[in-house]
Amino acid sequence: MAEPAKKVAQQTEERLEDLAETVRKKFDKVTEGTYRDRVVGGRFAEQGDHGGDKGRAETERQQD
Image (cartoon, rainbow, N blue to C red; front, side, top):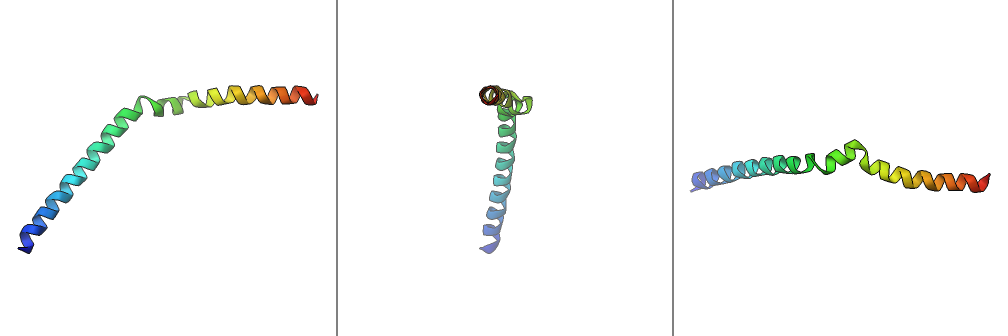
């Protein structure tokens, strides 16, 4: 009885590993063309920089 249980456990483990790999691939495919590209392209940094630079420029003007 121990052998069939081991076999079932091994098959289940292999199926879970395959499932995990499939999920990783699909996640990479979904995120590659959207969020990741925006971050790498600096789109979020540009939005934050404009607001931050504007605030800094105003502060510098007030001090002068």
